[in-house]
Structures are given as structure tokens and as C-alpha cells.
Image (cartoon, rainbow, N blue to C red):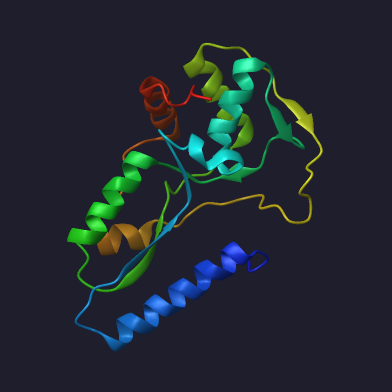
Amino acid sequence: PFDLNTPYAESKKLMEEYATTLAARHQDLVIVGLRYCNVYGPRESHKGKRTTMIYQYAQQMRRGNPRLFWDGNQKRDYIYVKDVVQANLLAATQAKESCIVNCGSGQSTTFNRLVEILNQVMGLNRTPEYIPNPYEGNYQEYTQCDMSLAQEKLGFVPKFTIEEGIRDYYESGFLMEA
């Protein structure tokens, strides 16, 4: 189910409806929709303010303590870009029927945990500063994907844990680019 409070969410829902209709009309085609969760990894800096919290916190931590909303216990399902590539390849080569599946890790991680991991990976000891959420009332507190359909239809199982993905991201050099 979609929360249609934003034009972005509404556009995603409309695209899925269009793809489902197209697949029903053209059963000779295999159409696969991948619902990406929070994709992080090298070269995301071009997204500006829309980069993942992983990248945003790393940038804040380069200069000082990171600023987290409320108590930092909001949770997101993050998927490393290398796993996304694998999901796309499987969708293109392994899907036997049209489907729409989630493309996430299947695990949610708190913002506090992201700071812990970034401290370990970056060799820092930063302490979160908690601030009021300026987006209160229109802010998603929790995401976690059910990955069972992706595994069933595509054979997709993410390979990177959040810790492994952030470490690989850091080692690529792109996590620290400004």
C-alpha cells in the first residue's frame, strides 16, 4: 500500500498500475517492476538534499556531530547499490512472469545505528545531537521491505548487510566526497 501524500508516491503508484495493465494486455511480454528502497552507494552525491541519510550523516560527521531527528530511532530499509545491480540483472534475465517486487534489504536500521556504523568505519567517535523534526506530520518513520516475492520471482537475495555495504562504500572513496 502506498501513502499518497506526495506527488512522488502518487507517480509510483500510477506507474505500477500502468505496467500491470500493459502486462495484462501483452502477456507475451515479461514486465518487472522493482520497488527500490533507500538505495545508497558510490556516486549518490549528485542527488543533493535527496542523498541517503548514510551519506548525509557521513558528511556531517566529517565536520562534527551528526544531527538526528527526535531520538534517532526512525528506521529505514537500506539497500546497497551493488545489490540493486544484481536485482536488475535478475529481473532482466530470470523473471518468467510479469511482477512488481520490492528491492530492499528486508531489514530496517535506525538512524542511531547508522551513526554507530559510520563511527566504526570512519574511525570516529561522534555523538548524535537530537533536534526537532522540521517535517513532522509528513515524515515516514519506518520502512522495511518484504523480500519474499523478489526471492520467489527473481531468485533475488541481497548479499550486503548494512555494515558491509557502508564499509564498501567508504572504501570506494565516494562516501567522503563532498
